[in-house]
Length: 304
Image (tube, rainbow, N blue to C red):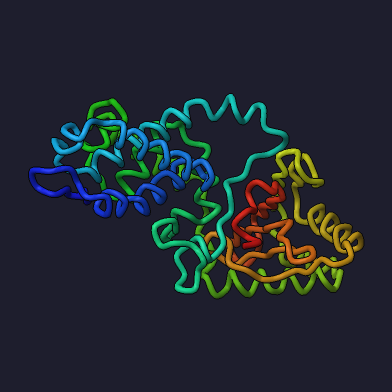
């Protein structure tokens, strides 16, 4: 693990703060929420600086210590997530991330606050992760994504290395069972562009042709915006619902093709403010899932 401190002394502020991006990356993948990930990182640093100077100096690897603490906080949050989700209004979808948060060169965020690209930030991937048990998710993310050894994972999860190996294996099985092979990036972009064009033209036949017959559309408003409450199942039903949306298009709204969690998606702006983000799962040249995020709390990074 990274993050060695200064020999024989308290690690410098720069050395400790250099771990921030790693912590943000771990926490976002574990929680599916950048807002919660930022809170976890803040709490992790608060615990670090609550230690006495001598205690901090005695820690051989501040990076390992910080990652362990952040992961344990995430594990506790995941344990209570089910109860929190029961109070959540409507469906819950992971927080979508724009390019600026995903480390593009022209992004507005400080590099330490960006999330690195990779399949593990893809919306379809995060949705499957959300169905795992907290221990499965932590073991899988830390070992398979961030390459921590099972001995290190065991120390974080509080189980034996053998048990953590089984947890990661179970998580991999869940992923394989739940996910079909996604379309190549270029084809994914073509399908999303065609979907946008058909939607704007209100061409229902074209929309049906782009949607898998068993496609599912899910919306997340958190009770803070108007949207459909229950998932819409079936390509034909989704196409009709989207035609209805096109006919009710508000004045001043514009539809843009944007990258959502590293994959082509769509964004609706109203008077310069992002009000909806659409993420897509494209399999065999057809859209299998549409995730519609309208909760303003999850769109704070899009407008800026």
